[in-house]
Image 1 (cartoon, one colour):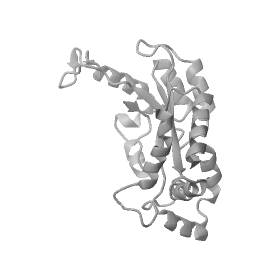
Image 2: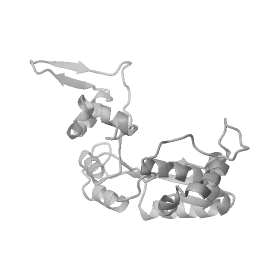
Image 3: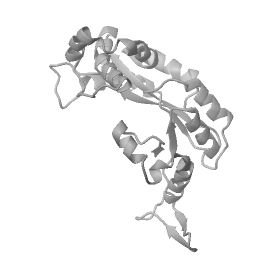
Length: 243
């Protein structure tokens, strides 16, 4: 069970969520995590009424086990909070990448052992486009890079372009130019052998327990709409790492 502080939506919904209610009180986020840990446990939680008295809250049907809770984040705050609560930590490297080393360092240095997790546990997310050739991988990566460029520059979002549409549009507007270097430095784009090697080095360098793969290969015009051959090929080429 991954828990994050961000509402995970567009700017309009985010603003509405912050106007009122418990989601508007960011300072209570640690309390929300403790509440979730209690409610999802077989023992349940206890509600304390301001007028006096308590009330027990348990899951229905009755819980016989508890999900492993991970704290999601991309900042020093989330790393330090996960450390203080003795929870596993996920750094959102797939859309950020900035501050990775510092976040992991803070988490591990400040980690407070818990009963479930006596030692720190980490995994990172990674955007990956693997193909049979480096050129094919670069072509399939362009639609998603352009989408991230739209997100980061505040432009209206559109349906994900095909490889051919992205190439034609890029030749006219150069939308991805300011973001291409960022993507190439934080994503894993290349042929299978290259991506497997770099991903293994990445996991070893940061001492990771797990890596979550986000295959973001775009589709060609002539590929079926109800399948994702480029993304499937990415996973096929990475499969030896999981063997």
